[in-house]
Length: 345
Image 1 (tube, helix red, strand yellow):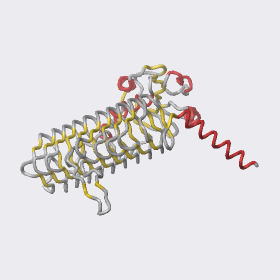
Image 2 (spheres, helix red, strand yellow; image 1 turned 45 degrees about the vertical axis):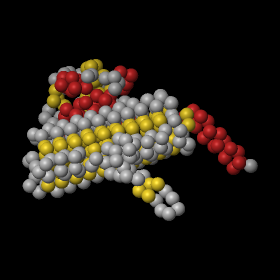
Image 3 (cartoon, rainbow, N blue to C red; image 1 turned 30 degrees about the horizontal axis):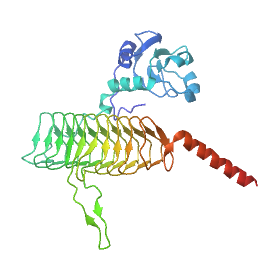
Image 4 (cartoon, rainbow, N blue to C red; image 1 turned 60 degrees about the vertical axis):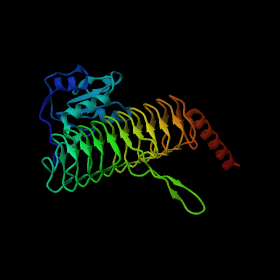
């Protein structure tokens, strides 16, 4: 449930509008029903909208007091009789669409602590800012930087020399961006570091010689990067984050990494330098990927895995070292049987 301290409560919305936003069909109920909020199924009260797509919560659904429920067709008859039923192909995606319309401020923060450029921010005279750019107190914009219309640079963020930031972007508080080019609608959460040196040293018995990192970071449109994630600039070519990719908190992306379009990278993943992720790759939390390998289009890596060799397109891998999940599960089962046999002897 939302807290009005942080997110303004929406006004009453007729179910007809919810149906439109959700791309849903009304299976039971009336389009004039008023929705005044959203809630989990177990906490919902009269006027609330809920969604249901997991049978784990069937008991909570049976007891819900909600006004309406987004639900896939296969579960529509599990919704209590007093609740309006909105059938959709993917309840969670429809829920996301509705929330985006009811709570737009939760998508990208539109409210800032300054109107335009704060008098407590520093903007180099050679920087170029388009209309409606907000720069909050303590932020610093370096020489020759360019920031597109409607973008927000939050408190104490740093935008380095020559950085290009597109339109409708957010650079979160205490984030830093250098040696980088960002597309439109890029969202960097708090503490993100983009464009710092990659980890490159020529090691030897007389000491480790630092290798200058002379590439950039290219972040394409509609990328979101979670808090305290770090994205190193390229060594001798660019580090690239493809359009629509979503990166969780505390991810490390090494130099020269190439990430395709619409990838999903979950918290605490480490991508070693010069690895390649093709489009639509998904990597579970706390996994590691070795440098100079390729994970093919649409492949999925289970959480807490170590990828040491190329992964074919569309494959599902897991384990340490990562291997096809069926093989991994067989190995785990075999080890378990061995352990059980040993404990019984």
